[in-house]
Length: 385
Ligand code: F3S
Image (tube, rainbow, N blue to C red; front, side):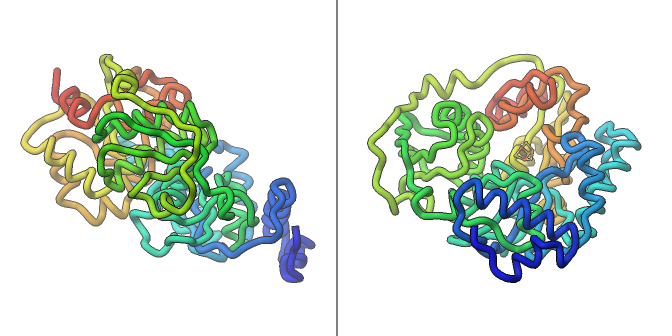
């Protein structure tokens, strides 16, 4: 990969070991994937924040870095709510280490908002056609598919390297030819609510890392597309999808010849039953509209089970009335974290979720049984003895 004289200086260590390491990561990726050069990015979103996932080695690695990010950069969810970690059942030791990780990122100039929905917090991180380096799989999918920005599936270290240098190697989803759909998914039924997560759960397992083009019978909200993409990125490795008539690049390419049909029966089969001791919403982090829906379903009622609603701190701060209505029912609104990346959910035995992504990850990453229900079913279960 071609390096400019300025980039050569970085890789030769003229600005210190941190920038040298960052350039080495970017150059290695560029060489492996055949990039011609580095291209400037508008923003970075950095995974590898929860102490649960990166542990002591990750904390040490980040703490040793010295420099400042060159573009607006934001963190993925951490392992706890930074204010209410005791209420979550997080230990002092974990909280101390988690704070050290976040402060180490802050020292590098990274914004300490910890969310997988950065697009709902800051308007200026990614627009149509912008090159970015994001690393949380649902955020990647949303950025590529719904916004029409361009990012590869970055890992935490490569997103941080891109943030420090302000550039990323030009390959993969940054290039037009890799954004065209290669399989048509015809959905033979109308969808609503968690059906999108259930559909993503099925399709991700079928298409792997290919680019699906959906033909749907229902109009889809941005939150529903968020759920669809998140589930496909979890059960498969889908980083980009198109929805005919809805997403910005859907009409730009030829319709692929390969086609599969998903029937109502298959979607229904993803839903499961059981006796949960935790009901969790907000994977990906709940939007204001989703909080409003939960508030409406909970108004004037009391939950009989542990209920968590995960969202970003920015959304929580912006909508104190919604948070109050939800919390009045006994449900807890947590931010900076989620039911998957926090160790707090591991003390439960069965989690009911409305998210296809959480349904896929909870058993493996939390060691907890998972049940998928619609939002209404989850709330009805929460209200039952
Ligand atoms: Fe976000 Fe956690 Fe789900 S990071 S997408 S809420 S697993």
